[in-house]
Every structure is written in structure tokens, then in C-alpha cells.
Image (tube, rainbow, N blue to C red):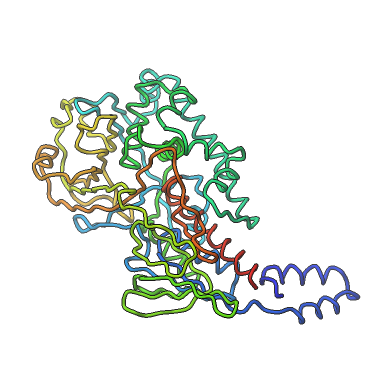
Length: 484
């Protein structure tokens, strides 16, 4: 049996170091090895999960793999943008944590520029007034935050620091080639002691109160505001792990790709040398013939192709794929498992009166980011100003991004804005609707069919999707080696 190219290279180096007497034997062994043959792998979905899987498979197998990526929409998946006032703005995943190694390293490898976001003025809105307004001056803001939220701020910092320290273990684990068949197994290995899995089974509000010691008004205002901004959901319905990930998403140093976050997907796809097919997949059929396992993919326009392995990198809830002749075909979960998010982009000037701001509050400056407290009478979950992709200045009036669970009516926009030049609306099933204790779909749908989006029920984030894509590639490699 022929070992992978990287292993053959290391074998050749060790033989040379062993000296001339052994060199002939090593050469003979290499010549007598048997090749795997070129494997054909289909990847359904060209978001972060699918493109990172394609790239890692190319790294693992080199010329011994033929990759075909099926994408019915745009490359990038939920990393998408909209145009407002002649400039483009991120509509999907918008921010990246400075300790997200995969996104950071591949942004650099692809020659893409990064932009670190300025936190700007922050406000916490309760529906009637702002309970906190920053000045964007640390000299004043830090004492104000401590006065209002006390030691809970240090407890949040300790929680996030511990989360990130444990989280980074996954990079060493994946460099060593370890693959996981279940989300729980991955989380257990990542945390080292099973803590992350335990957190997915625990109610966030209860965990943060009883285990971390956060006070009620901190949970109601700061923590709930972060959850509503990042996941468009209330703290009471989330599990503790995704809530902690969300808190990491409001730290300093957050950044984005200057030319658009979806450019990472474009670059990974190019490096993988995969063939991109702009078609939807209708079915995946398992075929066992003469001891050889194959999968036949058929697209909605009737084209079929045979593959040795398949990776699904799109939510089962919306994939609309029939799995034929599978011993245990995966069920189709209901679409209600995902949180529908309405995103309204407004180019205009907000009304201070609508937010109970007098002309002198915060120096007359409207907050750049408005978090909302745990109050469902507020018709939106977050409200913030944007910088355009490319991160030049917004031309003319500022552009605001409003997250909500229902469509923002024209009447409400009239109340929220003194004037507006343009309104662009979009909505999408942005994240899973979390509900502890969380249940996870397996990463393995069949012997050689793997599923990246299982990880989303732990936490939906760009880096989590990247990690799951790498895991799927390692599972494919493992399966192909075992059957060769």
C-alpha cells in the first residue's frame, strides 16, 4: 500500500539519513508500494466549512484526490454582502476574533488585508432609555463600567480567557491528524475535561449566574445584549457554551477581511483546485458493487456523477437532498430549528428622541453600537453603524444595520429615523435556534458521507465552521485509507 505523499517524503528523508547501505532497500520498498489511486470527493456547499474541507483534503492527498464542489448559490454561503448607497456592506458573518487561528492564518496566506474594527460609542438600551452610554474614552468609560457592573466584568473576562485557552487546543489536535465522529467527542478533547460538552447541556442564564457568579442586571443588560446582537436570541434560551462564545465576540481587537469575508472562501477554493459546479444536489445514492463502495450524486437538472466520498456542508434543514439506499438515512430536521433573522440596512440619520436621548447626552453623538436588554417589547435586537467593505468612509449619511425577529415596518422606520435615503432588507436562517440540553447530529451520515454543519449546534461562527471543515477532511482521509 502506498502512503500519502507527505509520508513518502518523510520516509525518503529518513532513508537518506540512514546511509548508503540502507538506501537501496528503501528505494526498493518505495518502488514496490501500491498507489491508492485518485479518489473522487464531492463537497456540497461552498461556505467556510466546504471550502476549508476542500483545501485541507488537497493538502492531505495532493494529486491523489479529485475535488468537485457543488454550490447552488454564491461562494461564501452565509458570508454575504448587500449594496447600500453604491457601497457594499457585510450582511452575514461580519467579525473575526483575533485568536481565530484558521481565519487569521489563511487571510494572511491568501494575501488578504485585515481591518481591525474600532469599538466606537456603545449603548445599552432597555426600551425606555439607555442604562449605559460610553464616551469612547477609556479614561472615563472604565470607571463608569466598573461603577455600574462591578466585579462581574472581571468574571466575564476570566470566563472568556479560559474558553479561548481551551479552544486553541483544537489546532494542535488537528495538526496531529485526529478526527472526530461526534461533536461531543471533539468538544471533550478540546476542553480537556468535558467542560464544553457540559456547557452545551446547561442553561446559559443559570450557568452564568450560579457557576460564574454574574449579577442579575449584568445578565439582563450586557450579557443579554451580546446574545441578541450575535445570535438574535434571548439568553434564557441559549446553552452556556454558545453564550460564552458570544461574549468572546464583543471583545476588543475584532477584525474583518478588508475586501469582504467571503474572499477567504474564494481563496481556499482556488488553492484546492476543486472544480466548482453551480448546481443544487437532489440526491446522494449509496452503491455497493463487488465490494466497492461508491456514491452517485444527482443534481436537480438530472446530471449524475460517481464519487468515493461525500461531504455535506449545508444545513440538513435546508439541503433538500434525498439519501438513497443508506442503511440509516439521516432525518430532515424542521426549518424551525433555525432562527430567522431580518436584517434592515438604512442609510440615514437616527432620531435621538426615539431612543430618549437629549441633545447633550454623550456629547450629542449617537451610539455606534446599541445593545438591547432582555426586553422583547423592543422591536429590534441590535442597532449599529457600519463601515463598508474595503473600509473606506461611508459616502454621505451613515449606514445602520438593524437585527430583528420580525420585519421592521415602514412606520417604525419613520419613528427610528429623522431622515433616510435608502432602505435595503434581507432575511435568512442565520443560526440554529439553541435549546439546552443540546442534541447533536453526528459528523458521520454514512460510511463515507460526512456532515460539517453538525458543529453549529455547539456554536455557529466562522472559525467553528472552519474547524468542522478540517475535521471532515480528516474523516475522509481516514475512511479512504482504511478501505484502500
